[in-house]
Length: 86
View 1: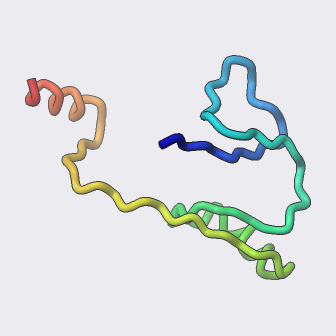
View 2: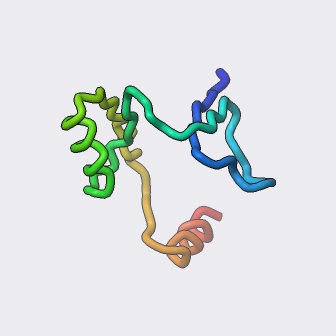
């Protein structure tokens, strides 16, 4: 299965910036739909509020579920976990 990404940016990425396989649309808005990730924080709320006020549709992308796996909080914890696996 091939995964393709649709990416939009105002300016092109810097040379040698890794870009995933897909289509890169370089355009400055005025767009008729807002697509936003549900990050759980308030940083993107202003654009959602503006879209509501202007009657612009919003597509909210839900985060995937967090896998039920062991987790560590820092680099040292990751190294210790890797050593335990060897």
